[in-house]
Length: 82
Length: 379
Image 1 (cartoon, rainbow over the protein chains, first blue to last red):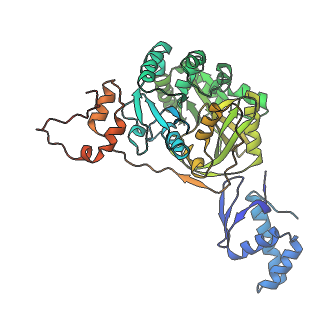
Image 2 (cartoon, one colour; image 1 turned 135 degrees about the horizontal axis):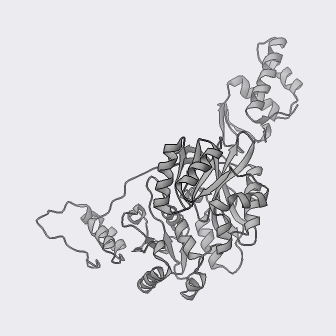
Image 3 (cartoon, chains in turn orange, brown; image 1 turned 90 degrees about the vertical axis):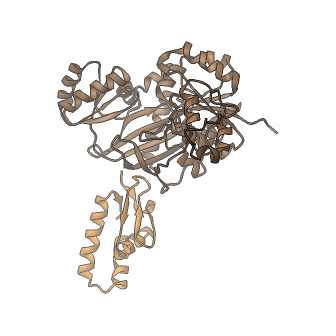
């Protein structure tokens, strides 16, 4: 059963611990920001908009990378609410 | 002031395949620093005999296979010299014997916390498939085998690689017929029949430590994922986890068994099924039992309070996820007189005094000078 994103334990260095599976992961700064935004309760669109506002990136690239990131973390066993 | 608790613990060796006793002693010392702790050992080289803050007195015991008469003859001698009230056995073979002897233990004023013999049999490795079915859980396909030809035939059906296990201890992965042949012969020789063949499961390993209250509930539970696994499959490292599915898995087993006393449940997350599968249930604390004690969740101390108290103790808190242990082997020092006292089958009540003389004992002893014997030494 995937672990809800809200249950993940993470620190400012991007180190992530899944308390249910006991697995550990390392996120880069961008990935960490995405997870933090989603953990704060933002939906995908709002989180994407925030990323575009914070990073020097065009909307198309941001959209593509955001979607790919969400797909990747789902494969890691994290549950990302739509 | 209450008199100090008097507790006996067995299984003190901590080597490549550590027994739980030394960890239990450490946990007991954390809560009950004044307790009198008696070590009951089967070998003079059980390393926990010689550890710092180890047992106050140590006695060799006959192997459980010697039977109840030999066990009680020796136990009565021990109780005469160093009386104790609680006994925490830690070896599967020993527990197999003791569950048949509750009346005799009670007659001697000894208090333990063990399941009854029927319950113990239900969690035997060859009965796990039936237990898992009753609980609605999965178990890897398992076959008990009683001779080598049966093992080879069962292995053909299960397919290689597979796990080969002794009825009490030891497990080895067999990738082909010749490895299986050697492993089964060794297990028969060490532990007798049956040996257990089990289909290999791919996925991470999890262990759960707890105490059953005998009514279907648990006094406490600590779950870990093994992070470092030795060649023998032992957890050299683990990290606390909190997964409601694993908790439910354990609760179902303990509820069905109405388990009484300490337990360790070994499970794996089967990557193919996406489900936990049951590997083993051990009727005792595991060798890592002092790890939760370091986090303030002391299972051995709670067990003693549970045996001692009239009412059920308050449930232990859960260990928060994210704490880990790494097994760390160190050397402990003994003296030839200690070894001699135990090896000769004599009693070894002088261990505390001998430890106090550690400086003298560790100094080189010229061979031409007669060794000064400790005044309390039976030599």
